[in-house]
Image (cartoon, rainbow, N blue to C red; front, side, top):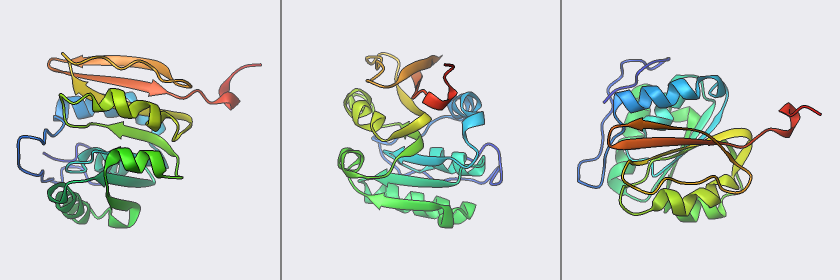
Length: 185
């Protein structure tokens, strides 16, 4: 696992061991970041269910301003910290040891990009998406990664579906929150 492009290009990343961790493949990661490439510059990122932190780190490498990494696993958080040290992104990051549901419900922060890549087979994307939608800035997007045979999420109130991408056994759905300033009168 590595950073694909940007200022930390080629840096190796570590992932926590175990069956509950499933790092995003380079092919899927490249597809996601190609789809949102014009939204990354100076973006505030939230990487929920962070795992290794590779998605938030990729965003930082490509020009995001700051990333918040949230996970409840100490094993995962140790990897996030080590990966941030190895990519020199510690000063652009905040790592939070907390349940992702608790964090998204209670945080006062809002974000430009929210990444939802939870453990599969638990309907986490469907359950947490409405809460994440409330923390998204105008013009922002939520990236949902889930298993293809799982239920496809629908747009929560205030968001619109941009596109769903199929990568074999994985699907990625991107929702956007329209920016009222961009709408024509």
